[in-house]
View 1 (spheres, rainbow, N blue to C red):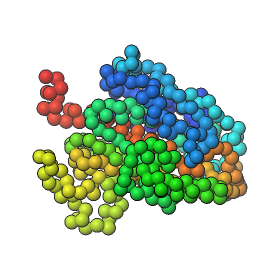
View 2: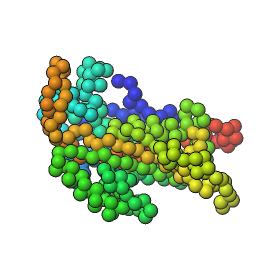
View 3: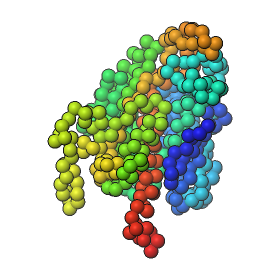
View 4: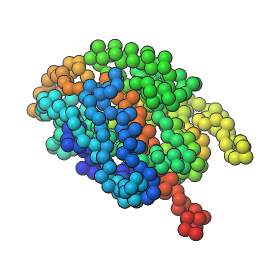
Length: 365
């Protein structure tokens, strides 16, 4: 299977299946000398692990990470870092039925069409548990970015019809509320809505947003490796994401140039902007403003309503899916988006070190 690696300089390769022995990642390009422990990574993994949140699948996994290589005496050595998280709560029997048919909204049919064979236990490689490796790598990328004064924060802005008020943003609320919303009142209404949909054997979609602060102007390439293109590819690679916006996103289609353009000014002796409709990116390159990325997430396809599908014999059948599933994936996907954005920013910042002769000379002289 191709396509399990992401990045050029900070390169992440993930492995493992939902009901296999373990999942994990190999990260190449981590600079030597970074203080790194399993606890640094576990903090991120705890935000996505199942079974400990009213909006999560009842499947309980501790998702304890083990660092297998690349760290010695508490610091990175510059060699590839291998990380593994072992599965401990598989119930593969829940999925034995689906080996013969294709679940609506899932990758069952497309996997069969591509490979002629698939791991049907929880979706195998297309399961949300694949993101464990991404989150582990994102924890490392985020720690490196912090040393450069860059923060990457992702949160939920909408669940179903419930929208969060972002005017009183609080990182503490994002990390403590089960919806990952920065708004307690919206959190409570969203919980009620998800509970109602759960009673009706249905699922819910939502919107995530990531705000990246501290990225200097000049990051990203002007043609195929645009910063917004790379961020979009990174976020769209998350299983349930169906659309990505940068800055004002789709809303710019209804604006005039005079409304959409961000006028420049001098603030604190530096070039700045009066507004940020661009979401911190112009011409595929960071402009020094906050980078805003938004992702739209589909409802969980595993629902307990009766649905129509076809089996491998080409017969039309009615099914009712069994197993343990999230009624909504957004709150647990927030840290996945945060991780993919951190990996992308770091990868492009490493590339940017050689974009000018002066930069090269400063490094080696």
